[in-house]
Every structure is written in structure tokens, then in C-alpha cells.
Length: 344
Image (cartoon, rainbow, N blue to C red; front, top):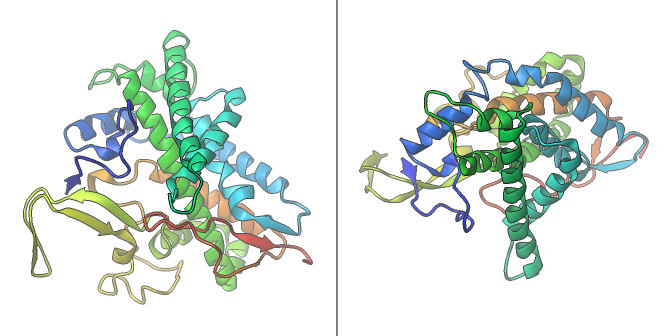
């Protein structure tokens, strides 16, 4: 499969597309350049090096929940966490971080824009936030050329690897991919995880007693309740036969990732949440050359977040089940997840 020539959502005017919307060889070149600084073999300690920061960030957010009878896992915890983590990873100065939180908030609100029910201001704020974010990232990359520092922006701006140096516009596009694509998915993964645990109190108690359970538990969560359900912008690059049906070359294809991860021919009792499941080759992060770039970081963020929430919240209980969901067929997750804790 390859990408649509006109991706959905369309690229914003004047912006360079990130490699998620590209095909080889351009996709491979840019992803290779980014991966030099994002994981093995060249930067093997990136995620483990963030361990202390992740734990401290999660702990700080949970500290703010202490003593509250009712909390929203989305607004109070899952939504702010990935922006904080990605800003730290990129090397965004601490004083700039509040602006990034506002921009991501406006962009995420605009993704679900419905012209029939929403004020146009919702869309306009998203468009403006994308421009402001792109401009700020561009200025930060320019600064890193003059004054290299810590963080991914600086390493990309000053690295002359085997593929040469990434252009500034490509660095900005890669940073935006990590911020935006990595945000909604991690928010949904953490929130879906907490919802699933509250629906399976015996598993929640097991996680409290056995913190190491979190590793297979998050893998099962990626299979059972993944943050991305559908990838709608792929195209068949040749005639493909699936179950006696020929899909002609050039046809748009929607990949139903969530459905594939519950295929009864592949997974025993697929509709059961089972953190002890073995051979769990799910599609939660996609597959092939477009396998999720930020997957290792998303895994560790979610593992630490769920472990600490379960350990530190006081007898958490769902306020509404099911909770209200985002109106997106592609991204699956509650827009709010209200829970009571303590004596309620």
C-alpha cells in the first residue's frame, strides 16, 4: 500500500508534510534521519533516559489530584502529560511550554470540527494554532543552529549523517508529527487504559499488587482498545486479491486496525481483555514501514501513567459508563473520563 496523493486531513497551506504522509524513497530517507536520534541503534538509551522525567511528570500531575473527590482523567491528567513529555524530548525551553499546551489544545479541538454544530471560531483557532506552532518551532530550529543544546530539535538541526542534513522545514514537520500525532494517541491510550481497568477491577487490583504486569497489560490494551481504529488514507499500488476479491490498483483502502486486532482466526477469545495473553501480535501501532515512530515512548508513558494512577488514586470509580466519546471514527477515546475517588 502507499499513501493517497492528497492525504486526509489535507496538509496546511505552506507547510511541509511529515513523513507519515509520504512514500518511499522520500519517506524512508526522512524516517531514517529522524530515527538516528530517536532510538536504536544510534540512540539506544533515549526512552530509558527519559524514565526519571516521565515518572516525575506523572507524579506531579497525580499530586494535583490528591484530595479531589471527582477528577477527569482526560483534562486533569492524560491531556497535559504528552505535551510536557514531547516538549522535553524536543528541547523546547520551559518558558515556551505553556504556549505549546494552548496550541495543542486548540489543534485537537479543531480536529473534531463539525460545520453544522460547531462555531467557526473552533476551526479558526485550530488553523491559527498550527501556524503559530510551525513558526515557533522554526524559530527554535534556527536558534539551535547558532546555539546547539539538548533535545531532538538541536540534534536534527546539527547532524550531518549518511543521508545529509535534514532541511529546517523537514525538522519542523517531524517535530509537529511527534507533538500532534503523538498527543491524541497517548491521551487515548492512557484514558482507554484507565477505563478498561475500572471495568475490570480484578485486573486493576492485580496491577496494584504486581506492577510488572503493566508491560503485557499495555500490549493487551493496544490490541483490545487501541487509540487508532482506522487508517483511511492508503492506496493499493497494484491489484491485490483479498478473500477472492480483487482490489484494483489505485483504489483507496481503509485499514481497520482495531478489527484486525480482534480477528478470531488470529486471537483466542478476542473480545476478552486478558493481560496474560501470549503471542500478542496486535496492530495497535500499525505495521510495516509506517509502524508508529513514537511507539516505544508511547508504551513507556502509558506504562508509568497506569501504574502510578492505580497505585495512588484512592478507590477510583467511574461516574458514567460509557463515558462521552470523541466523534471521530479514526481516533477512539473518551472526550472526558470522570471518576470519583475517596469516600465520594
